[in-house]
Image (tube, rainbow, N blue to C red):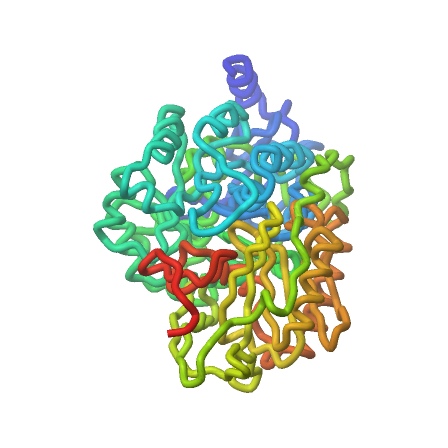
Length: 574
């Protein structure tokens, strides 16, 4: 390291020997929230000088343009984009995202350590820096079946990887509050490495937030409004403002952000489907949305760069300053963030043509993860008595949280009957890792499905098969289709498969180029529009989160309907 520093110091004193000089740019200073005119000298991937330097053949004129740091996504699950890390990188670099902090707990819940290692290996073929946090909760809870269990001993050796920078979202808060041994071991081993621990404080009361902070969990991406965000700030948390496909919290949190507290806020994505990501990006989209709704552009850029770097203990990233890695964007203005050039580690990236590199071989078990017995109509029946009310999962638009709704539903011959007109549909979660035959059943309101069925092997966080529909025949065909393709998304109507996206990598990701996958997704959404009333939300993303039993109020697992408030399974009928 000393040799590298001495080399950089030498070049800082001999600017004419550097690799690249950006001339006459308007430099964005994320430390003081101001801009100033100057040149940026780059050598060996680092910024070695800022000032006014003589013109040379290594200079690029960026007059009338802004130089800002490369954007950092503070929390994203790459698996949710439905492409492998190397393909994710190809898709996201054009939007100015140069570093992401990812939690591979989706694939870990399916394929364990082997899945995490695949993500690390594949990420090495990426132009974007993909930094990993180790999954803290595999399984997320004991109230569902998943494909693996990871203890502190299982994870310990992975801390030696350079790409690993901490412990990912601790969503099993009962284990923290009750200081259970294995969770305490995970927290201690990461603290001993002086790495950062991420939170997942969905719906936690003030006193439980205190316990989270005592446990050295100092950031959270689950605040859904300004009040919750400010409560976290006052308790010492960094708040990651989430804007993804299903969870869109930015506008609700925005009123709580100002110049006095902005350093405690940063942007993250959490989960975003590929078609949306390719179209609008992630963190760049959050910046534009925040600025459009009144946030100072310099604060928005600060939240997308240096704040994320500091939050996660990432050194030498997130600023246009000497000694920092030269991850930079050249943009025309700070309002719509129109990107002119992306510079990654000191080199100008051809963002229009990111060639696909040689692919890492995928282990066979990861490609054969869907194991289910035959599902019959009888297995999908929800027994109810005439005149009996039912507990119903009510979807809240733009939120991961749901509401517990109680209402009368249609009953025929002693079992629940879906009613598309009332938007009361049957939903099932089928265990797919160990062929147990477990099928959890529930009723959902808010999907607005007019006919047919939709199903997916992307079902957070255990990723069993989730299916919802207006009739049992189409639901069963959808389940069988996912078994045959070893994972993906599917739409069925009148016993016919209308569209599907195959995701054979752990039932979560495509093995195809992202361009192929996004075309299939776009076609699927086109077909979805024919069977969904008022199709405006990402229905498959919403469906996938109806299975996550750590976010209020009511969810469905392969073991049945789950009440998050009581942290117990409950019956559908009351």
